[in-house]
Length: 293
Length: 146
Length: 161
Image (cartoon, rainbow over all chains, first blue to last red; front, side, top):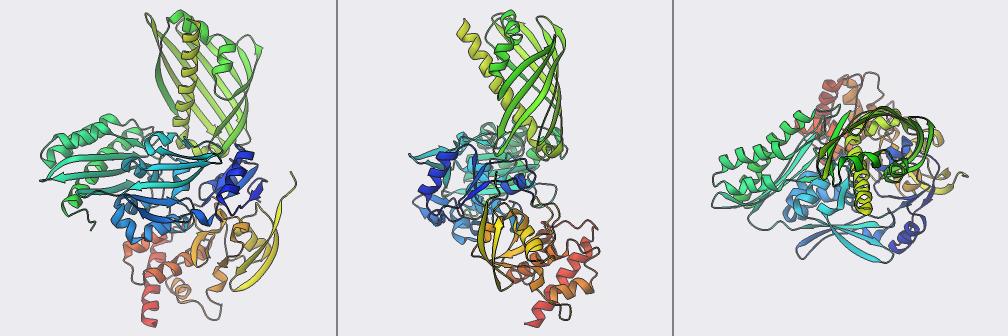
């Protein structure tokens, strides 16, 4: 057997799960979709003494639009979000990006909250969360707290989540009117982690960009939001000039590490090219009323 | 994998140099360090426990100072292994005198082997995170002492 | 530490099983070692190669990334349920006819993905087929014939209905 020996718990109530985490943190690990944890167990890179499987927590199996927010419970699998017509209207960036997460076989098990809690710097959903200003809802046995996405990701595979906390929900804001969004990625094969991915959003008025959001995966130790590049998009009246300026800012503002998959220079080049393509696509979509082709 | 960075510490170079040569300070500021035992004039045995997400490992290894040029530069060689694989690194620290401040330039060349190679794309980021924790701790010690 | 075990109830290819298993055993290993359903292949054991793909409640998943205890109370379908030697499933027949398998190691996982994929998208473009296959590695690099086999399988399934 590949995984090391561990004690296994599959609580049926959130309270019970939180008690287990409180009693056994940090040696206990949460098992959600398992699509990142199981490889680590099979390789024996991770040797937690206990797993707290949250797959029987029916209370966290909700995907609802609530006021201005899409609330995604910890048990919601990526595939469900991908197939949900409401998500495509409500948070189109999330719907578009989620198709890049692994493969259908992975998304059938993997959860949105699990991917966020795992905090892989090359993963798509953390970049989406940062681009949108999503809120991470963490709970321990004493209560709840909300963590803005930009404060949540603290390093590679590291987050603000404490060992006794469970990420019970991710909250994505509804796309306001006038905005268009686009997610683009380059990876070695479809479904691999991003060599570079860009999440872009723009609000367009009279053909000019008035507000912008740009966030990146794969080019830093955490998902990176690039405010200078957002500003560059807004400052130029004409789209073509704005795109030239934003490419320059992306090249200047990002400092990716090189590895066996791609050099630092290549990643930076990808970032600039993808920024232009994604910003243009988001602009076209904003003018078309936020609808994706 | 080559990794480098710079860090400004708010103290004169002589004080930073002294701190960087104080085994007690090093031991308390190195993230996850559990033991640091001198085994020779410029050689230490170390036990380090590092946990990144679910990957927690106890690394046993040796640290050797291969070059020491007071008060501006030293070079170290580190070798360690755990059940997850091995890590080898050569590192250089250079201290630049900026009056009341010191700029520390650090660089390293890291090799990993075993199952750890699976996560090699994260290692520069993780090294940077640990380095930043290390320097923040040194900075606190410098401020406490002054 | 003593090996923690648990008794689970699985439905595999329509048959109920009650098994007492180490909690750390993956579904892939239980299928192969305890149920002797060796059609499910185990390649990378880290979710990359796709050889171990089975259906959990009708949806393709990596059986190497699922603990068998997590399948407790669920239904599992493996490649053994697709067809028989005498009567191959149309997708299996299309792979045979188009030389879509060479050494055959990756084939069971690909079949499980393709049958589910064509159920959801009966007339896919070549681009969509390639995307659907991206989660599988064929180290004989026989991808051209695999894509052709999927196209052919789609035609067969559509004309059958």
